[in-house]
Image (cartoon, one colour):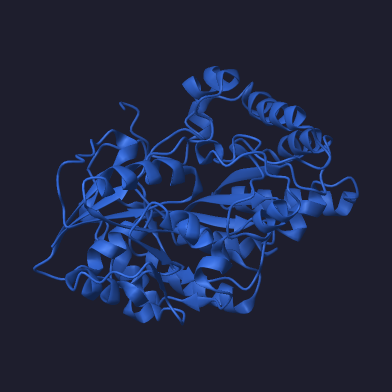
Length: 426
């Protein structure tokens, strides 16, 4: 069998906003391409010979040949891709080609996805892939496939990144997965729904093998669980960074403001290759308190100190601020800009809270009848798609524009993207 793997196009969250066109012309943040998520290269690694596969990345203009007649089309998508994923799936099914859909969005809305596919994979694909393959060969594909237990990460193959096009992305950094699942049910996060609430760790040796196999020396750990402030997470990440220190790599870590207050720890991360700390504000208690009206001067200074610990260690702090949460009012815009200025943050992005399927927030907004529409092309955290509590729809959208424009007003791109090795010729 030949599998056609497809990564559907989606709007980056600054695309289509005339109010931000000047900013987009100067800064790459929020409007760049990089290789696809790990789902498809992992599936490629799970496909045994003599079966074959090839990838089409819709985001970089690779043409989809709807008349190709592969034996099966496999599509992985998250919510901003869902509309396009359904269009692609419908077009192939109209030509009698079998289609399987999986990923974060289908896992949160399986019955919706099933309207456009012959089968939907809910949750992790690895435990059910061999069953899917056997059913395909027997022409007995089931509508839904769902693993009963969390996948043993010791069995995870090295993703096949050779299926990616070369030198066609603005940022060539790849993704590396170190954990699955999360015990914290943050209101906007789909991970517990898709991967479960038990945190599972990939072996350090397997992670290092994965990193060694990559064609580029920059990569992004997909797990903000690595930065959780507990002994288990610290020990695990320290063991990884001791190995990566020998590899001459640049690592982009993800976190929340619930980070460890220890300057020596960040120096260790830098020694291991950490180049940037992508830090999401909005989901964790610490950042919600920091940006609230009730924030004390001590809490404000503690937040600044965390930023400076990273920067002083040589790790570029990349802030990702969320607005539109039910406990926020319009004053959060000024507080975000003030904190960024006080902390000396020179790289940031801003997102609008979005009720993704499979998240507690998505469930709540559906139950409260606060969702405005389900045009998923607009569900990219750059548009208001629900009825906010302490903003109007327009004031939330305008606050989004103001944050981007005011933050970057006096900043030079050469400084803001200093930790990224990007291809500026695209």
